Every structure is written in C-alpha cells, then in structure tokens.
Length: 325
Image (cartoon, rainbow, N blue to C red; front, side, top):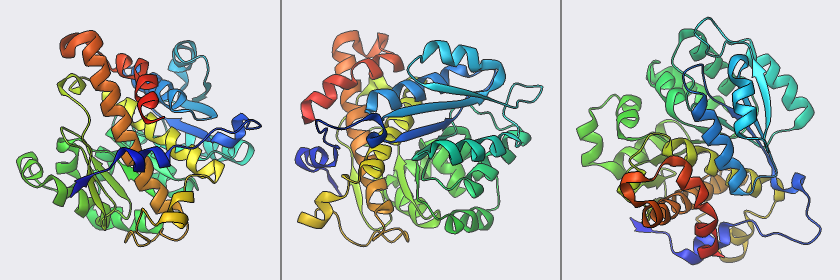
C-alpha cells in the first residue's frame, strides 16, 4: 500500500478553460442537517463550494433552511418536510426526485447531521435506492445502513446503478462491519477493502493516514495532522469529495488520464469500471483526502492544532489547491 504521488493527484484536478461556465463543473445535491445540527449542512455546502463545483444545493429540514441559506449564500437551499424532532421525513425524497428532473444533479452527498430517527432512516434508504445519482455517504447515513441487516445493505448497494464513496471514521467502520473499533484500528487497510467489496463502492477510512480502497486498489493518504481531530472536519471532507467528483463527471475531463497513461487500473472490482464511475469515485476520494489533509496542516500552521476549527480547514483549501497547481 502506497501514497499517491502529487503528479497523480494533479492529473485528477479538472482544468479550467476560457469558455467554461458553471454547468461544466457539476451540480452537487446535499441532504444533511437537522434541528440540532444545522452546522453540519453548512460545512458540507461551504466545502463543496470551495471544491470548485459549479452549483451546490443544500436540501435540509425546512426549519433550518433560513439558517443554512444565510450561512452559505452562494449555495441554493431547499426546505424539506421535517418531523417533530426537526429531522427529515421520507416524503422529502419525492421532492428531491422532482428537483433532480429539473436540475439534473451530478452527485449526492448524504448523511452529515441528519440524526438516526426512524423517519430519517427511511428517508436515507429511499434516497439511496431511488435517486439515480452517485453518492458520498457519511455520518448518520452510514449509521443507518449499519443498523440494517448486512445482506439487505449489500442488496441495496449492488442494486444501485451509480457508485458510492463511503467515508466512515473507525467507530462508524466498526458498526458497518459488525466489529469492535480496536479491530478496525489493527487492520485499517483490510477493513477499508472489505467495506468497498461488501458495499460495492469506494471506502475512505478516516484518521491518521486515511485509507482509500476500491477493493482492488488501496492507497494511504499522507497529509493531515492532529488538528483535524475536531467536530465538523468530516463534514468538510464529504462536501469536498462530492464537489471534486461532480466536476470530473460533469466536465468529462476526469477520466482523461486513465485512457492516456493507464495510471489507474481498468478493474476496480466494484462493477463500475469501464463506465467511468468507479475510477472517478476512487480518484475523487483520494484527491479529496489529500486536499483536506493538507488544508488541515496549513490551518495548524496558522491557528495551531489547538485553536483551528473545521471552518479553518475550508478557509485553507485555496492554499492546498495552489500546491497541486
């Protein structure tokens, strides 16, 4: 298992051309947040915007829509039906399907701050089974999947026509694989590979030396430091990966390296190789992990690992991009 070289990561960035417009760089749809966790949706939206995505829409419980809209003014926002707890209800998926017909979103980011309320769990399962979009699956969406029977989750994921990137921390990975956290920490690469194969996608196991695996190919991310051990930094990673992936898919430029230089193997073992989905999912996850970690390092230098926050990681993403450019 090795780290990705900077030249490989640089090739994964979608170049800008003089006559490009915002539609070239994809549309990210975010399903996140609840009454007590509006900040999670805000962080995902801000990170997706900083990634370079053309358009970002935050679909959140209606009660927090004004808060999210005010804190991420460059993003669109949609208020969805909420229950008495201020969490999303399954009826909201119909609204998202209608919006997708109009807006033609590129990538879905789902999970941060949602809660695991039974109605929200139904929302997540329905969204993943019926929205025809590649998806970055994080936080409470992972916990909801982990609470289901393993076979039913495998059937759900293998029935999807679009790939997923799963971004668990060690505790979430343990729940997803029905293990103890200490077992995950002992075999980080093996657990990432297993989740990627079992759930038919790309797994990114967060933590020092984040591991990214397609099941067939596994790399370790070299960037990041202790300052990232803060609430909200995982939400930033979710939005960043979704935005990078949306640019690759919408522009049609994300897979050019594969056909020219074969830097990425043809077979990823997840059913999406050859259609661009699996290769680009892996590359977006690896690129996102590097940028996120490097922005964290820059935030540490500026703010110290004690005082930096997730918002500081977002503010230092331009510096991380500059190093690759």
